[in-house]
Image (cartoon, rainbow, N blue to C red; front, side, top):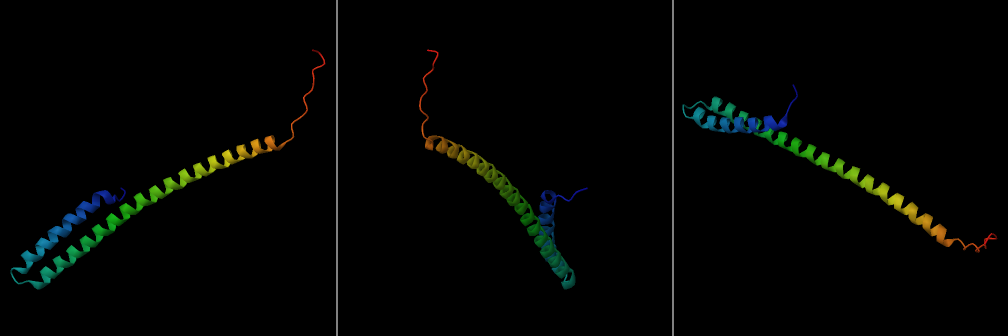
Amino acid sequence: MTFKPAIWYPISVVLSVINVGAVWFAAQPAEPWHATIHAALAVAFAVWAQRLRQNRGGSELQAGLEALEVEVSALRQELNEAQERVDFVERLLAREPEPRRVDPHR
């Protein structure tokens, strides 16, 4: 089974919100340690959610950069081919014209 951030991101957000609410419930009967544990869990799940979101955005950005690199490489290749053709035509035009020969069979 592979780890899928797209699935775990909403789960971590929900767990963080639940623990924030649990802080209030745990603090009512004057249990500060219980409330502190829920607050720590809420922060931990929020940090985890933030990291999952950054990783997901980073992979999309990386994929976009790779696609751009491929496209730039293809454009560079096309430009090189066009430059070679221009150079060939320039060499042909720079040559002196050959004298016309008369066909002896006419």
